[in-house]
Image 1 (spheres, one colour):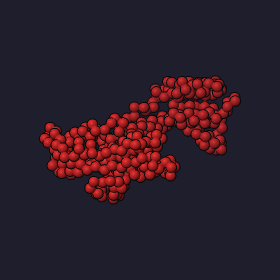
Image 2 (image 1 turned 90 degrees about the vertical axis):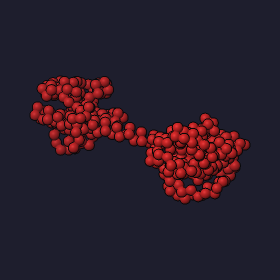
Image 3 (image 1 turned 180 degrees about the vertical axis):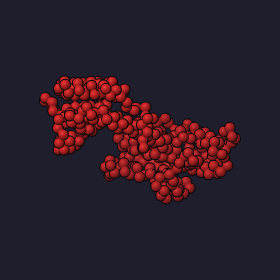
Image 4 (image 1 turned 45 degrees about the horizontal axis):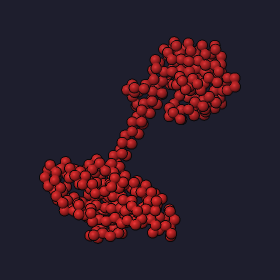
Length: 346
């Protein structure tokens, strides 16, 4: 059972705001007196249907008690307007229909239009306060659920951010890389530019992992990341697509060709110094170079994008555990087992 006492937004007689809508002052007075005797403090009464929207906006009632039949408008049309406002604001206003109608057909019609409760005018003196207490409980449960859903929504959003950001290297993960690639394809296609996808793998990562505890291993990854980032332009996109792999997106002019030489010279077999000592880093690299104008005459834009995306997917780890062979030049001709890496458990 849901505990509404812990809900900071719980509705009480002292905090509840009640709006009475009735064109008869006597009926307004009777309902208002019942509410005052029940301990309710924040009460407004209106007669003219023209004032309804203004008071709903300025008073923000939790509960509305309205008559069915009024000059120029009826309670059902007001209820429809209230529900439309609730949908926009993602809230719920409890609606009492107080009327002389008490037949089953009228009650069914009222409930179908979104009315929460139905009280005959003849029963106001005996039924209003018990029904108000029930309404308070239901509203408190609603606000508690909304508070809980908002907290869960925030938690999910935070988890999504963590899924696209590696906590060790502070680089985007393979999910972030896939999103960036889609944008890069669009940009390269629009500008008739070339697009290169480079993969850098720490080939002795498993050996480092076997030798080092987790904190020193993370420091090695962090130092390697810093060195890797210095080799690229700010406009290049660098991501950690696996525990031992980094992927780089480079957009360039149509006549430019990217090279792996500078990466291999800068990163392969160098001694990385951390406070835990020296660590030799060995790397393997692969490069997929795509020139958009090559396909412009033969394929339409949609086919071109599909081809570019397939090419990039062949050059980066996927989460569907396939066995793929690099379709482009690969120095060691390896077949890599692709996994959906979880960085927090390195």
